[in-house]
Image (cartoon, rainbow, N blue to C red; front, side, top):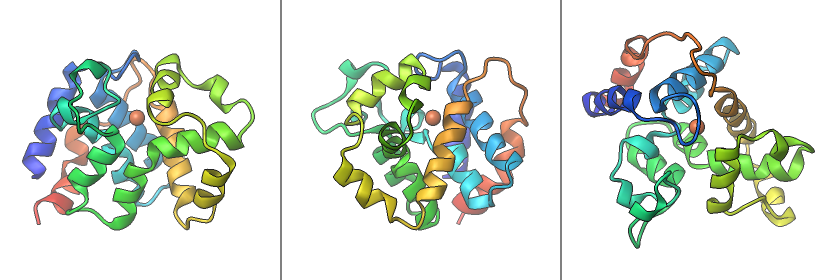
Length: 185
Ligand SMILES: [Fe+2]
């Protein structure tokens, strides 16, 4: 599994991240590095590194909020759900949960933080619609009491910040030991 994942991430260097100016791989590396620089623990760094795995490591017909939604099959779901399910057998429940809710964290911030939606990139605003739009008050109240909400919101902010063209990061190989530690079990 570690080899498959590292291979998919390597190939993700050739894919643009949605409508952004970085590749899927650059986006993952920037997100993980922002978490690391902020002092996040290893599990949260791993969640950041893999949060979009559902965008590039699974069959696109299973994914609803693709950049090419016409490729989505009849049973397609959001990339966050498909990605979380892919990694869940190997990672902690907290890591899988943070990956699963990273679209909901965006929906949550749209409702709870004035000005947040206006700061989203246009690609991110487009997928917001596919992901259910801004949260209702009842949805916010449900998520607000979750013990890992802070982690999900933190991931979301690093996700939003991980779209800088040309930003230097550590290479994927620097993360390989962490990936192998989790996925070669
Ligand atoms: Fe992302």
